[in-house]
Image (cartoon, rainbow over all chains, first blue to last red):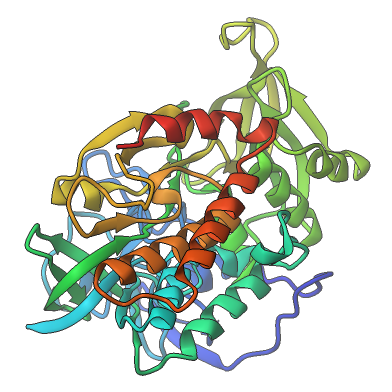
Length: 104
Length: 359
């Protein structure tokens, strides 16, 4: 969910960006990180732990904890909390250590 | 190989201030930042700062960030900024390897200022890895930078200043804060922050902590309990709370990995947040021309990070032969500012910690 009213901050309407999440076309806004765009849509599970496949989500927001690693345009282990969303990006949930340049 | 006089790792308050002061002294630098923008954690801090005017007191963090970034942008020929760039190698001959857009870049430099800041600590409890459990600072970024709410109903763990401030900001953004849990018998942060929450009816439960989180794919509820004198849960005091978000605010740890990598002498000092480098009065580590500034050498406020940045930029420049026209005056002023920021009862543990790392 996005904040509509805030006593201190103003969130101006920004350009809509279209991207793909696990093959489905979805939308975010300019200025979003991949993780913030997904969170705004209600997507909480961003990756899975390598051994036990436990669900993992947004945690540190500074590119440090690796809990938000996803496959972006075929590249695995992308820190989605510090990566800006771009038009037409292909974002996929990661369930393993990541394969180098897997095919979409 | 790219050559530059000074490499500053981290574009937060300490790194930006260091670059500005070095530039004022005539020394060029390169700021390396792994995020997509500089400004550090100030960019999400909507509250006004304390301290004195010199550290921008009564100004909101978001506005301080703008001031610091604008200051650096005044020196386009002397200060280069590389964002979305991570330092992956650091060598004693002052070679720094960077990773930017999948390319390795090698930089030969004469001095390095490490200003990497700190990261939020995690807390051990059952299912602490469920999505919906966040660092409190991360939630602040999500709300105040991106305008996205973490959820509807949240509990905060930790009543230090970050826990109290972020709880208040959650309410400002329209989130229901059920309560704040504090394991200690006393509230950790400043009374002024706690009072703001209490006036809004938020219960700050001292001697309480989270026992476990419950949920399948993401957080659905939590079990909290009361703690005894030894911080053990008292049987029969468990309480279930239905929440979709939990914020962890139990302190910060210096991001000192790069210092361990280059081999500076380190020490674990709990009062400073964890593993920190030994430094001299000018913030130089045990390796010549490797300096530190900000939270990486002891977790404090952004105000101290700014002043430490100025101080370090000033002394590094002098060491490399670029002496600021007002060097003596500025040096004494920065030292005095740091002394003032660390005075008083809240600064006691910090002062003891800093004594431990002096070389």
